[in-house]
Amino acid sequence: MTNNRLSYTSLVKTLSWENGVLTLLDQTLLPVEVKVEKQESIEQVWDSIKKLKVRGAPAIGIAGAYGILYGVKDKTDLGVIEFLGELKKSADYLDSARPTAVNLSWALRRMVAKANTIIKGKPASTSKDIYTVLEKEAVTIHEEDKMICRNIGLNGKGLIKDGMGVLTHCNAGSLATSELGTATAPMYLAHKDGVSFKVYADETRPLLQGARLTSWELQQSGIDVTLITDNMAAFMMAKNKIDLIIVGTDRVAANGDMANKIGTMGVAILAKHFNLPFYVACPSSTIDFETKTGGEIVIEERDPEEVLFFGERRTGPEGMKVRNPAFDVTPYELISGFITDKGIIRPPFCENLQKFFG
Ligand code: MRU
Image (tube, rainbow, N blue to C red; front, side, top):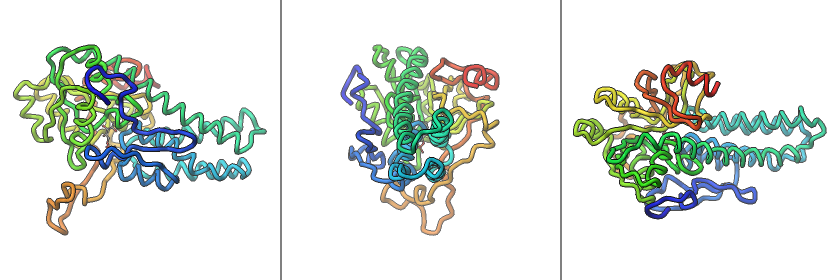
């Protein structure tokens, strides 16, 4: 990524698929080291998702779609029924890596459904034929995500005006997707159009996605970005430094409640207090009509060590009890709108999400 007027090709590649091989940018090493890691097996892909080498809802969906291919690429000599069984097993295995972002299970379900459609349409298909179509489907999921993020950017960029301060939480950027990001897409496109604005990035404890990833990728692209710790957001709002909040999401329930990185709900409550617009950038793959309200969303609870250490430095006593929920649910009442690839969806969300995406 180089300075000033961003071009799509200058954004760092979060993941890529070439000649049947998946490579991931290891995000656990950023911003100190930019290292791409070749994935050799489905187990390695599972581990990369679990350890957040690849993270962010759309990116883990894409990694899952490619990862499932590793699970079945040596099984194409099997009969079709056995092959489908292996495919389903691989999907269930990868799905167990992280529970909250719906994009992972969405992409895996889409791959399994594609295989079943091929059999129905062409009963004479071999396992090899199915594998070939599945590889194309994974590439399609990846390419679609690029287009969806561009459209989120086009639909959202008008919210960002000259002189504004925009707050974001966690990383819903290029690193969390295939290209422009979701929350960052309006920022990248407004910047490309010459709008002059500042971004404030919450550092996002415990794993610092805001500090390590968002501030890094925005700085690389020449956007004016300032890093703050999570507990500074209220102060910045009180000082009139923030005019707009845009965050990403891991799952949107049918009523508009949405899960995102832990701390997002607090930012939304602050926004309400200071009467600031709170927008959620959201690709269609993140809307889950099967989940009626946010209360049904499974919240991932992660390793206590993530809270007990700041990098290498121990920050809590040994043996300390810890809670480490990775996400929280922002109630729909606190959300001004969803910036989607089909436009900005405003309340009532129950009705309007259905109308555009149901
Ligand atoms: O635990 P992470 O880093 O995967 O959490 C990521 C987020 O919470 C993002 O905001 C969300 O996935 C949206 S990414 C476009």
